[in-house]
Image 1 (spheres, rainbow, N blue to C red):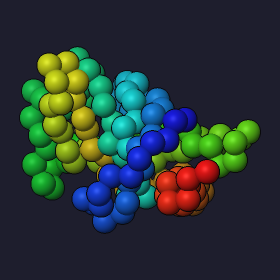
Image 2 (cartoon, one colour; image 1 turned 90 degrees about the horizontal axis):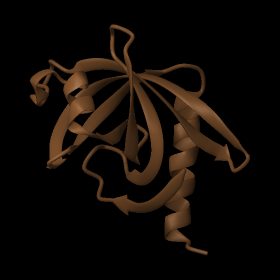
Image 3 (tube, helix red, strand yellow; image 1 turned 180 degrees about the vertical axis):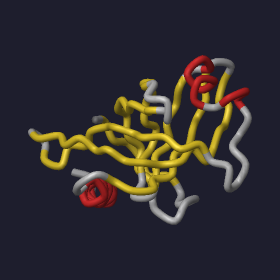
Image 4 (tube, rainbow, N blue to C red; image 1 turned 135 degrees about the vertical axis):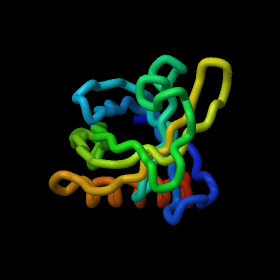
Length: 136
């Protein structure tokens, strides 16, 4: 995973830029692969092409508050450099934004995690935030 800069806190948690694959599973079991743009303790922003976004969000219409789309997300974070751990989380697509002709961003808010997923994300985000404040 490649980490970059910190974005302003527009959610209730600070986000860190991360580049990694994420698999999003729809309620019907269909799985689609996207890229993580940034990660926080409360959610993840992913980017994907128009075809993938259309499969996740019918008619590419932003979800209305309270009518979010339920998904499962699976991705890895390196808790220690040599040992990435797999995160499995249930969440809701709560945001859709077109970035370019064939690029969309989807915001997924985490609802719950399997196992220690939240703790691993918390540890990883804290490490990236600390590293950004104390560059080597």
